[in-house]
Image (cartoon, rainbow, N blue to C red; front, top):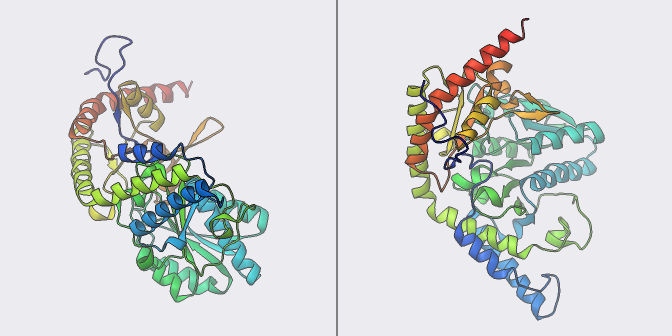
Length: 409
């Protein structure tokens, strides 16, 4: 068996980074734009010259982001990231709609949402009496507009909002957001979408989407950590989570992070400008990786859709007989960084709720890895993975068999 760990003992292999869906490196242009204003002294809420200069930078960033996402500047709410944006949208719209009509306590939510949405909905269910309906997906993770229509036909009078992600963070499924939003509009129900993954690889036209709200974050698009955006329609009622100075349309109080906003705007502008060529390159690398993994590990199973229904940079495989955590650590030791789709609860790996919702069994769901490509990815990265993977899978299978035998004693 070819060693998965070439080189002398203790040598640190060159890192192949295949976890862009978790965080993608900042663009140099974003670093430059952000650092250029880190020395800005003014508070954007102050009326003196330094404050006005900071406000101008903030509003220019807002206008740039709005233009790149097909929104109006007044619809751009700065937040600390995707999780806060999701919480503000889901909790805020739910509370506003419930307060206006006490019957509206139901939330319709996709079954494969990110935990930033699922945990928020579960919190509302536990502490504020929300009723939750999970919208089922098919074997590729697609939520059919027919499924949403059936749920709204039954629950429209008591529904506060619908929330369905634009693209899945684990298996890369691109949902038919325009069609789903159109169904929600037929029933006059506001729809929110977690667009954190979509923002980096898909054209976004908020005005044309039919959505009431959409969440984004900086570190997925080559921008800084700790800054994000909620696009919120001007006529969409929303109760704030944070109270104080009344910043961001009275929806998100707190001193504005001007450098973060500037860095996010610069990164998003580069993302949008380079998207046609970047997505073509990512799609080519993705298809090479999928074909290569299937050839190198014939029993590997691709999860999620194929072709244009999948995010250009997403590859997600199940490796039968392996534990995802074992594969992850073996690859990491070989200098290849990726991720599992599993959550960790009290130190125990749990099967991916996404794969379970798609019909996978728990054992298969635990043996999966996500490889995600981005702006630093190269063909050499893909080739390194394909050269390394067969030995890693063989070793992980052997470890799994040994563990199974040990467990029968």
